[in-house]
Length: 357
Image (cartoon, rainbow, N blue to C red):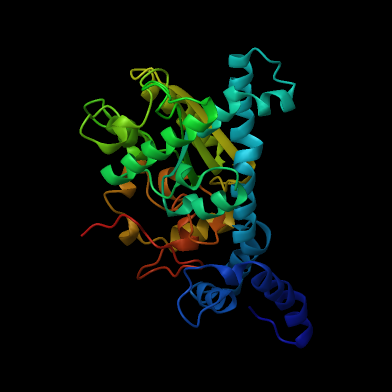
């Protein structure tokens, strides 16, 4: 970096060390023996001139957004009380004839207690943090919060059994077959940059993606989840702890189209929106754009990334995000941050879920 005396290291190095200890060192995909400062040195070393390195370091200092485990856990913890619960309360208030402003009365009503118990929370990936979600909401039954939306026949049978048992206590009688199913499914995940992994359309017009496949399974009588949910206006609530405004637009439209044929009631809840103003749009940082172009390596492109319609210079589907999550870097983030190859080294190495063989 051209730092020639101790004062240069104090001026530039101490803030980097502070951020490394405060956040960056907790990144879970660093290799053994590697932490942020070591990774930063290797990353900067790929740039040939001091000017290029200064541009890269300025980007890290001024534009990088790193979401720590503590910050993500906070978003997980408030997702139910601040977002899902108010929605369920408003629905229960309408059913019981109470004013939605009379929170205490609605909360203690049979309608709300039944509606809350007839809600099933399912994780869509390992980023759903269902363990944190469960601990933050101890009043929910353990059986209501599952790590995966892919349910076995045995698990589905157990869920139905526990639901009937608890509803019998609430009603003071045996619930009917129509009452003995879940009326709300809450699908949980940590982040969406484009929305495409949740809902997408195939060439034949059918829906794919995590949410698309799950809802399709509910129409298959041979699939275990098909017997768990009501067939009359099932509430499909997608909860994302963080999402871009682009993903929000895509998912709102996709959920509406996906749920319409099934007569489901869709709802999208985003705990923290990632603002458009944080995106690194091409042309806003010309010097950094030059680094992206010069050091791009197409080796990272696969058939899966091709679905985004762009290369990975600015991330999957041109996401252009300067974002790093503590457990992994989204592929919607700038490729220069996470991709590696013969022509580029990553600052925050990413674990890729979908790879071409």
